[in-house]
Length: 288
Length: 251
Image (cartoon, rainbow over all chains, first blue to last red; front, side):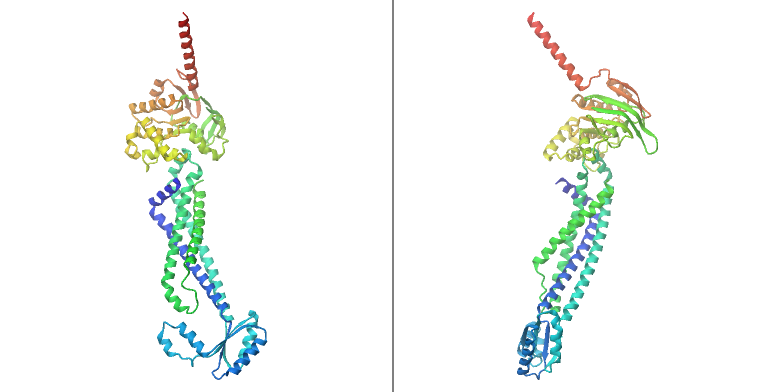
């Protein structure tokens, strides 16, 4: 493990270059971590909406129980409905109270009378959502229909845009960090040219000379990944209370610790690859 | 042991560093390479360790044509040849100990074993008390000794010393030459490039004179004995003495 000692000495002896290399890696992995949070979070939000009733029909206050039952039978007879759940005014209030249990002001303002009764309907196929929604809208006892396919597809569009921007930005930052690291390691090789020549003349193999520089690249990669992940995770944990109140009812936060650790593991693997690629470029360029 | 056959080295500028040089050095020999600056002495050394390739001819070390040696075998070749460079090529940010440790480390020798070997060589060259010093803290003669010690680290079969007495006063120069002679007596082939005529004359070893890239004179040693010859003669002497003893007993 002599090459690790040599790499450690090289890092110690040029702290500014080492800091620059670590900073660019940190920036890359900060972006990787944030985009990972965004992509995973938005996927979770989509899954949540997909698992929820896809059509919600709110009844007018004038609707009677027999009218509601008749509509339910009519919907069931089409064969397009997977499930129908009737939510009464009382049940709606309970749901509202559960969602706003930490906000007594909001609880005081609302009573069961204010909230409408509703149907929560899931379709057998997504294509059936249109006809079901049409049927509900035509019914005289229905005041409003929320058709969640729009929400899901809008979220889907956003997520795929975020994913594309993220991948593009990460690819660009990775490329920048590879070139910056290759330049920094190349400078170090140039500085040690005389020492390297001496090593070769006393019988050092090419790998004896190369390994410390490759270890150095891997070190910068891993350090940058750990710092970038820690900063992003710290920020996420700090923002969790605000985000949780914003995403009320959608169980995305807090982020599971195992998921965060898996992300760190993946980032370290990616960092090692980036470190090896950049130091290899430097070694091949400057150590012919 | 070392054979240069019809070797020429033409540099990029079109000038010849060496021109059709042939040289044969036996195992255990001590050879002086003499000649003015730029005659081609260092070029011969650089060809022997394959720091450069000849434009023409063969360079053989232990019957292996090193011109055709694959690159991955180069490290192995260089471990067999210890070189005392004209500009010393010491690591100035490392101690004397670390400088001598380098070839052992490169060869993958265990630290405890390598430390013992470094101490042994430092004792041999008389620098044990300076082992923790940096090259800048040493005198010219001491620096030469460090370079020789590093060349000796892997107990090489060949030592190439390029002007090891170059900038030294007469007494120190003699100390260095005596050290190289001692190393040679232990069986190591030594080729030393020098300008110092006094040393060359007084030591009575083989002298190869180079001028303008050509060997102009090859004077065999006055007491020319390669290591093998020396051993042979010693054996003959022993046999002769034994025979004499037996004859005396019979009488």
